[in-house]
Amino acid sequence: MKAINLDFAPRRRGRFVVLASLAAVIAIGVLLERQRVAETELDNWQRKWRILETRTGQPMANRTEQNRFAGEIAQANRIIDRLGLPWGDLFAAIDATVVDDVTLLSVEPDLERKEVRISAEAKDRKAMLNYARILQQSKTLTNGYIVSHQINNQDPQKPVRFSVVAIWSGAASGGQVK
Figure 1 (tube, one colour):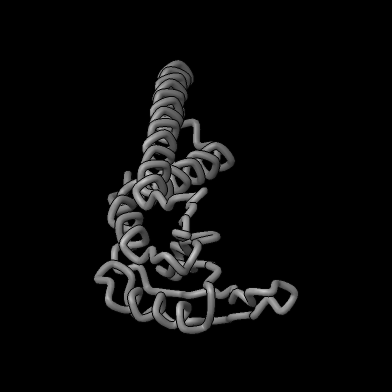
Figure 2 (cartoon, helix red, strand yellow):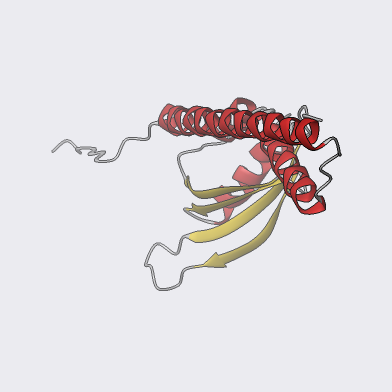
């Protein structure tokens, strides 16, 4: 009798990149629209402020308003920094590390530390070490190392759940508005 190989869940490596890219594009669109609205509102307030200064003949220096606008500009700069990052390169690098014996569970970029934490589950320790080796060969994610691992003894196959941290070489700051 001939063996039948059933694969009910074929891996689609490109799906992760496509979904992540789509989510990034949508997020960028929403953030750009919010920034445009904030800039329009800021322009309106500044125009009203100049009108009041002209009518009264005195500068209208309100420290509270100035601090609020400074906070909004700082927030806009943080958003611009994040939008300027090469997200596509990151998703492509992560997609290139996908192997059959390892399932990615989460990807958590830490922009302040310029790191990416990847949580995954491997079939065994050998697959985990192979994944870490593949990650170390990436040009976008460098200096990758395993920070934790745990064998699931409850499962008869004894899979290994682990976390890897790597430096994201593309996590440099983008442009800023002054």
